[in-house]
Image 1 (cartoon, rainbow, N blue to C red):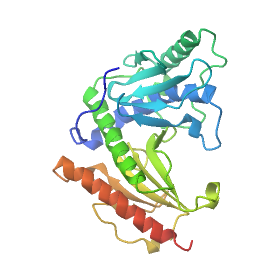
Image 2 (cartoon, helix red, strand yellow):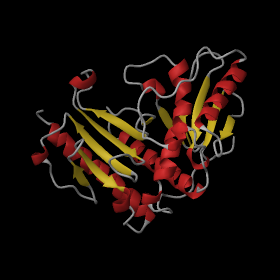
Image 3 (cartoon, rainbow, N blue to C red):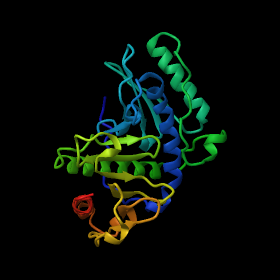
Length: 288
């Protein structure tokens, strides 16, 4: 199909104006994730329900539900549109503007049933975790009244994907860049002890959050595990600061990044922040 690439770098809409678009997109992604929770064998870390950003589609796309025919679900953020993809065919799509959350789940279930030519084997459930409250959960319809804000949110995801893939190319023990429907962040995990399992090994989480309870705007984060003593934290460069409450992490908020007037310099500045923050975290974790 034709490319749906997002044009331009973020910065066309003030980052503080994206909260409503982000919350609606977060709820929409749960509908796409329901396919994975219902049809993909579960993994202990819920990675079976994670999404990747696909540039050609301009969308967050799930892993493949293997029952024939193989299907993938997704969300085109810029247009607030659910997708169901099958091999060799045009994606099914559903514009969420004016639809309720229940109607979105019904569309996904009906379309899966149609493509598989058999009844769904189980209902497509709501997420098995808490997400931020919003009237959509109580029956309010999705609203695409401010399309420029959804387009800007999509630009942040594409910007973050590019920077995280660039970083991952220099880190042999970094995981794939994935979006997690629970927190709605796009992230990779650098394992410093790749032979250790689970929480036994040291690691550095690096990601882009479109905003959450900690920051009501997009932000990059670099978070060491286990958490170091906060009195040992070094000064950060490139507009970053340390967060010490709730979690310990190096943070670069959107408003600080966008203070750099040249869009190309914003990319270089964000990349430099991530590289420097990872180096600081690696030093902090030495000997821990």
